[in-house]
Image 1 (tube, rainbow over the protein chains, first blue to last red):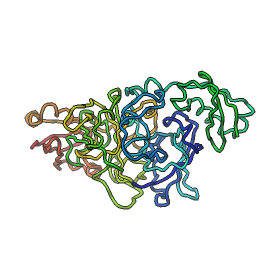
Image 2 (spheres, chains in turn red, brown):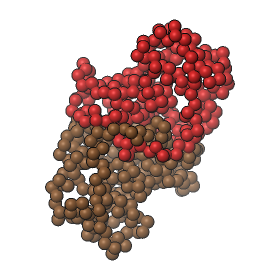
Image 3 (tube, helix red, strand yellow):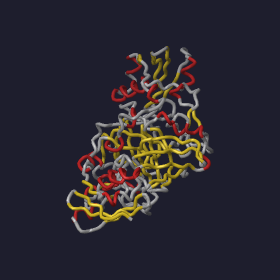
Image 4 (cartoon, chains in turn green, brown):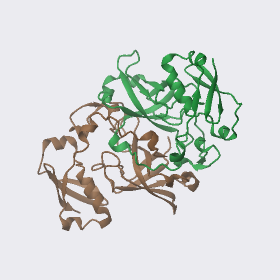
Length: 224
Length: 224
């Protein structure tokens, strides 16, 4: 299986990554292809699509051996589920699947055609195996029943971001950061412990953003 | 990249395969896992999902070298499109992506847990890399704009299937076969030539089903 491209995003660490694609719509990525695929003909027609699939490598989560169950963070981190009933990265093959919005195709960069996408859930530098157009007639099932995921995905936090701290973030990157924090990125098992004094730090666009959470309110306490 | 399972369907040849998943809802498949993954714990919770993703190998379409464009059959077979703007099997990595309906999980077979799915678009024996639950909140984009695919996917044929020929097919397999023929499975470049006398044969559930097409009507002329 060949790496055909890498995606570059504002997320430099695993902690804080959105749990799925599309949850943080403002989080963007730039897909840079390997030299072999820097051919504009290979992208002809792609601009006509609003969304694409990225099939990528869980490069930070490769484990030897097969573990049949995982503990999804969205269930608090203590409930076992079958790995094939989850989107956990710890699976037989480290394949991630994300649908993202295609913002633009930039043909004339120094490194060949590049794709600008939004709603990403990948660390910067993540290797990519394939790009496919999203076909709503075959890929979209809004009526699909989604097991335990139906019950938990809506949880979100109110974010309090003092203006003097927010001003340290470039303006065009502020809204995605707030969206990200609203998702409640704390690990599940920590959340159940309700440690209100604990300070978390998330790396975003080169900043270390520190925050505390009390009940459903997240307070940013530092930006370095 | 490990093969974790194979899917067994009524399609034994590449010719006649549905162009995408979900187009022939009656076409079913049985997913049989490799011994290492025959562990019921690995599937716990999957029954709660109505749809799953299958990430599979285009095992019949592996080519060396990279060709940047393909000619989609749905565009008649003569128009070049960028490979990344299509779902063509001839891509840098032979990875197929299909969302199918999960009909049931059979835990107690002689070969471990098996999944029964419908709406398949794979040949019998196709190797599988991964199974993931379909999450409508992240995977479903009914509003997605789908380039040239929006304009062509609706084409279908009227199927005339004489009763004496249809009776040779087991009753439970008849409706999927008719659905399949309605899709117009002829190769694109043949279709544009309008060869009304040509007899096509498609292999389905062990039968060879012969037919002719005149304008938008498909006539079955033989079942062996």
